[in-house]
Image (cartoon, rainbow, N blue to C red; front, side, top):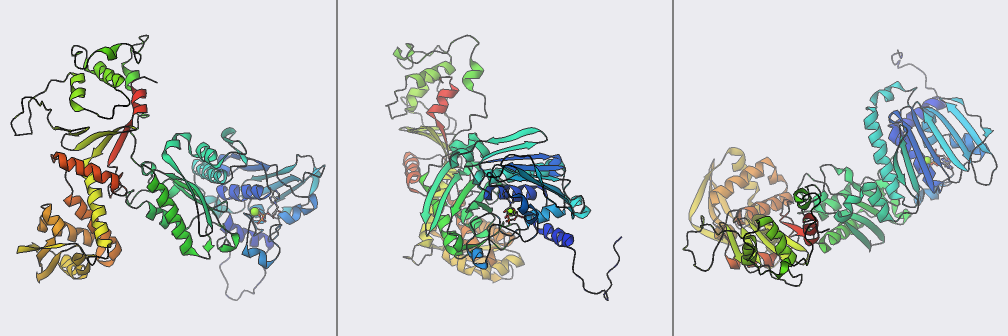
Length: 629
Ligand code: ADP
Ligand code: MG
């Protein structure tokens, strides 16, 4: 038991072991921190290969071996001494740090909380040196055999600091953190080859001299290839390269968002904010983008000496970094067609499921195309559908409903939803509306085609985005005072509210004026709406319903205290309420108008909540599904 603190005790110097253990408290939190510090040392030593071995979550063994510059035998005691480094020598060096390490405390810290040995040989030396230290015992180097480079072995981490050891998680969790750390280190250094062995199993084998893209795909998974967009930019002295994930691969945690500054993984609130901002409207609030972003800036423009593990940095010019990242990520997303593709890899291939073993699939040009469309009504529908696509002329731009229907030999049943009398010559399917090249199906989806394949649009989601962008543009435009048009109501609409909502009405006046709503308190719990947003009015939105929902949301989200968020939310709500609904039958001009907007409106691939508006099934995927490839 430690003795209780006595306030009359004299001041004394702490032993160097204790000093180092205190420092270790900041730098070495868990096995993954040891891996990080040691691999960073190997990277600083200009290694071309780094091999990492761990056992029992890194608690029993961590070994890092490299082929870098090595440490001369007489320097080994200094390497493990605190505040001893070869990377800086004077105060000025702190202004422009070009290495990952510089504090000279990692090895001393690790040595104080583990059983450490370093075997190292500079290339020009014939013999290696070995130093072993346990707590403060040992530390005399002696000659030994070894290849050029350095092998650092850390055993029994925290054996002498039980408090720390207690805080470690299960072996599996610690192993997971080490793997994540290795991924990040490897991502930042595609020029270096890495291996990772966990409990004698090889988990990572990355060759040296990979391109950044290849390294990213081999660490993150090659299946992401189609989902990542390359970012390349140079703005305000900030070089940027990265892979920006489509909204479809966003995740529930921020773990897949990685930002590297001059080869160092950093965690920077302002950059995270810029990234989130660039994805605004493409992602739901709870999702984080998958993104790998490398920033290269003059080291003198950033202070990396603000965090013991150097995970946080301070920029000379925070706002220009924010602006540059925001612009670059936004532009990358903007350039791309973000329409998500059907995930056919997850579903069983239709052709595979249908194929009879041994029976060859009919080949393209096997004579089937000679039959006129519709003459094959006796063949089962599935095969005629295949036939139809087989004989589809790739040059033929039109996608004509009646032909498909005939090819499918679908009997035209009676209209259920359309009360209008049937045209004798125009047979229709229930809930199907055919404009040229376009179908509306189930009064909810619009199906059309583009150069790549079939495009399916959720009419509500797309219209919601269109409305949102229109409203936003109008409110941001200076002409017209930035307020939305307003329509006076012949009779004011009255709404019963609770006391909180009544109070909020006062605080929300500015916002209401901006969106064209004039509402005032008429009694302690009654609100009168005198004028309503023209757009909502035209779209038959009920003022009472709207105000109810709006006030409820305003209170729940505390919008009366955050004008910027409130504006975004209310535009969102207006767009949603004004948009055509699933189940609304659209006229041909309405469909055409909606499709025209799809081409012009920003971020038309996603609704304002980040859900997709559009899905694409490419011809290539179709071919695959039909067993053509
Ligand atoms: P820092 O990296 O901040 O300088 P460390 O305690 O991590 O401090 O390392 C101390 C010194 O030991 C380094 O400055 C470097 O000269 C030397 N060193 C450590 N690891 C290696 C290695 N793998 N290869 C060559 N030299 C190394
Ligand atoms: Mg170091």
